[in-house]
Length: 224
Image (cartoon, rainbow, N blue to C red; front, side, top):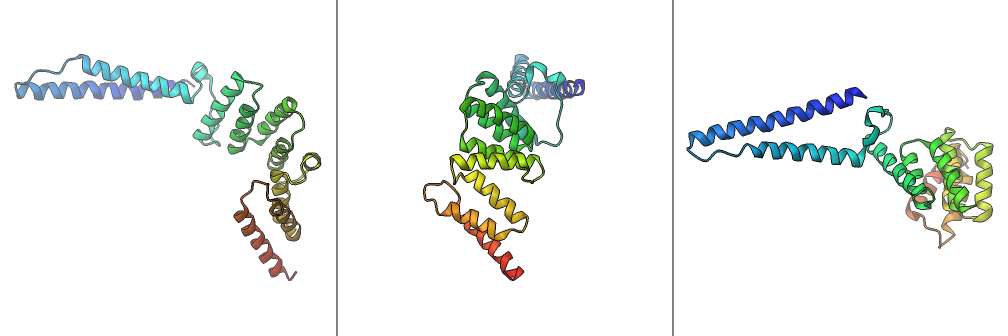
């Protein structure tokens, strides 16, 4: 993107010009006050520091090597895009690191890139084998990729995850959420209560109790 390079250069030029202008003004005041002049190396040093900081910040948050070929996805917050870039680099450095792959999945999901999340989860499953938590994450990614619908593909993954771990939290929460969104409140309550019945499962119990209360209110409103 040549416009990006032009914008960066323009901004840097403006800041550098401002630094030198301030240096000239300061020396004028020093002359009037009969004080020693400020060295001309000071604005040069400040400009160098500004340029170095700009390059360091961009190299850490952007794609420095091919910035002029980059494409901006305006539908993703730039901070999320930076997280995705960082996670991609980690995976490039350690392609067989399960934690790196899962971090990339989380970054993709935060950016709404559920199709990419599913592909990354498939790579993770190929690496670690059938894992209930990874399958639960895949079921969720498939669900949101497909517009909050449990398709045959998603249902197959759900069955696979629960066969390994009957109370896998992500999978059960997905079932409860889908049931609630489609007005199957009793089914949603059953899934949430099943999770609450497992003391070893790490879940936000207060949030689930609130969800059960809302579902029960919906049932009362409908006369059940």
